[in-house]
Length: 82
Image (cartoon, rainbow, N blue to C red; front, side, top):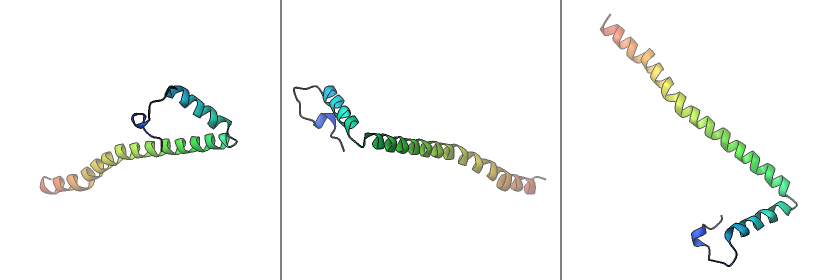
């Protein structure tokens, strides 16, 4: 876990340069391609999961509404008010 910028001590080198040097160091590592592929897979899985949950949040209330209308409300109305 990376410390937040507020908790980092001030230095003579700007953080943007340090961040760029860190990215360069990660790129030069022997397992850089493997790490990029793993990060891509993880991001694809997160995207798929978030879309799935958004669809569930949208579809389930609509289904409950329609099913309750068909199987609960309509039969009660038909019985009481023919």
